[in-house]
Image 1 (tube, rainbow, N blue to C red):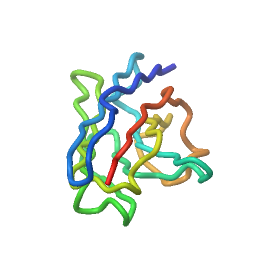
Image 2 (cartoon, rainbow, N blue to C red; image 1 turned 180 degrees about the vertical axis):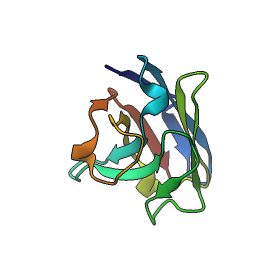
Image 3 (tube, helix red, strand yellow; image 1 turned 60 degrees about the vertical axis):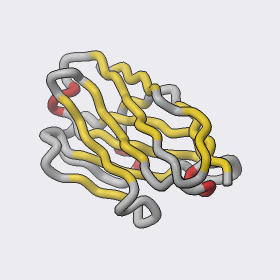
Length: 124
């Protein structure tokens, strides 16, 4: 069992930066692939970034490549998403998710645990 709590969301102007954190509890975090997803009003939830259990491999949505960086600190049971050069289209609720597997996937249905989400609002 893994419990996830996101933090770090807020309002920022276009071009600004935010760093999201996801604190995990449970003994299996270190062996779980993790993902950041987002959902904008009226849109489906989509993968933003994913990372394998060791932090060696990552994947990003094309829309955030070069601007967002996902990382994890297994010693602190924490997942991060550094978001730079934010755009208005990045406005959404951001969720972290954990898989009961060391390998990530873009399929949100393959993630077993979800946080409650944190709002990110980017104004132009």
